Length: 402
Image 1 (tube, helix red, strand yellow):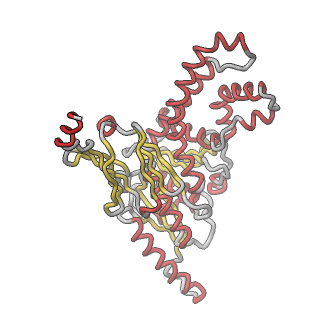
Image 2 (tube, helix red, strand yellow):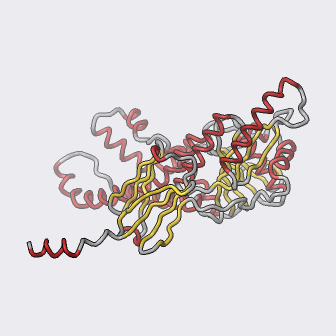
Image 3 (cartoon, helix red, strand yellow):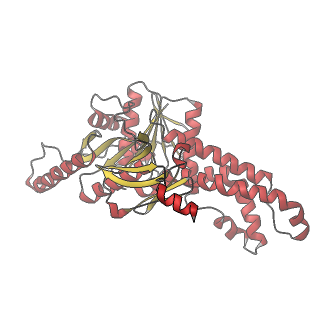
């Protein structure tokens, strides 16, 4: 099953492009589901139909749903939340406050992504189009599965072993609520779901991101940052969609300067993102609402390209052999050396780009080696791993004799 995620700065027409893509794919005979994880849903407005939280028929071969984040939170977090509420009640926190405090910010959004796993496993559709929130929220959302899995894999196994050991003693000494098997079972279920979501969305054969932007300086700058951060977390961008370009047949002098500015920005887009395909859509003379107008926009954006195809293949992160060691290569365009920080701790490599940080669990072949250097080669960061240099023989001899 093919999965397409659409994101972009708020107001660039991301939802319209996602809806047009879905209509175009459905018109080509692909059974298509388009879902929104944006808390400010606007899919229903784009299609001009009522859309609920479950699959709603829109037209032939096309269904849509607007995720009820609160409902997904209730079904995925309730058993875990119940324990946290008990714990805070015991500490004297009011129940209403405890329920609010027991929800980690962003959880409601991440549970929306679990619907991606559900649709992929059910295999009812050929294409799943995901209309994501604006870029800042999307980056946080896409990084959460890996971040939460890091905590779940390290913190909760230790806590479970401790709890099993001290529960008999603690239950006699204090009224403090002790987490039970249902709590840890819920944690393990969450871990499995998040791990499955992450594997689906980083699968180079099935899942890609399409960035939507307008030919404007600030929008392009945000898209460049987003492109870098998506690569940092292993997500592949297979197309850039530049929306709302003033058409050539608009000759009113009022738009002359705007057309010149847009031409400059389009050149910047090409220089920034090629060889990733640059798709374009003109500024239409009306709101693109309803299936027929969305079909027109889909033709504008994709032309003869099959919507469902992977339009560009890239490898944001890979490891290759070099000499007696290895090189871990990360594609990080638009990054300056001063914006980065890299350090190693045990089996993990910490990479920070701007305000975003990723913890990479190193494969076994790299865990035995040391980081010997890091350099940019074009837009790729190369981190060199090699064995520690052997101590000088004479020095070793003197140390041994001493």
